[in-house]
Length: 382
Image 1 (tube, rainbow, N blue to C red):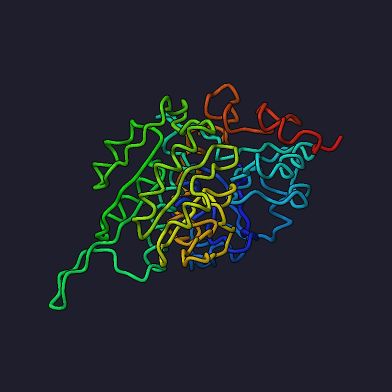
Image 2 (image 1 turned 135 degrees about the vertical axis):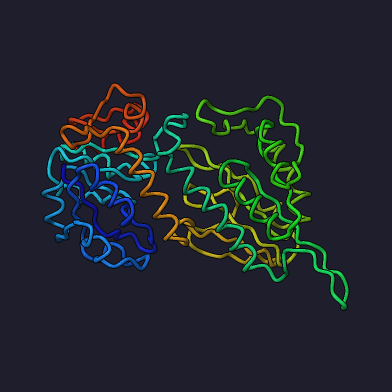
């Protein structure tokens, strides 16, 4: 089986879908690998690190027309999908609920789309869970960004000039990104408080050195996939009010709340921002799906009238591209290896398997996921 990958064209994307380490593992499985020259440049990996193992290089168009599986980080644009050989399995982050055009283009092109966001959160699939691996890094980067933009230090410091109190960090959402943010801020010496709508995570927050903020929202919980359930408008208002006092007392606020496949909830409104002190840094990890903070803007830092800095930078994992690529490529390898036919040296597209049933969104001219099909709707050409 011929597996290929090309350079990422999205501005600011420093992750790659194949690393030399993973390439070596795929070659041992019996795969034939081809890359576009310069693939590893964003993270300082030379072509020779691939070719010395037996990986070949080819131009972009040749790869599109000759591979059986194409590995990507970001989804290819519709124009490029139309150039890919029919029957190819395209693997990447398609984000179909917010970017339906690529799904729509893949259907008439005869492609099979395997969207890594849809890998189920099960024990067996944990090693393939791209969302978790990348969210882990996003949580870390959010704290580093907040610390860099804050005009204070994070740890308590006792000096001859007096004692400096530790910075106050408030993390909203204790999923994978939130928990890593809590752990990172605590390691840097900050005093950390966190809130999540799922009371079940309280012990996890405390185990990482954080204090759990208690807000009575009534009936809440989480989905089967481990995501927080969407709150009612009344519950959201109670949450905003309960968080406002903590936000006002914080130096850094990090918001991580996202709803899978839907617009992120606004958890910090303009009134809450107005109650924060000058110099407070707010990092909105959900900015790419609408944002948790009123006034945040994608890929911008907004300074409000009262001096609050709202950071809305997208693709935080891409800011630590080397490790993000290592984790992403390992997730892809684990998926491929799970379904690898050793005898035929190929990927078995077993659509009866629960993992592939969940993440194969397009196959044989059909959109297999009902929610995605509805979102794409009339965008699919006849």
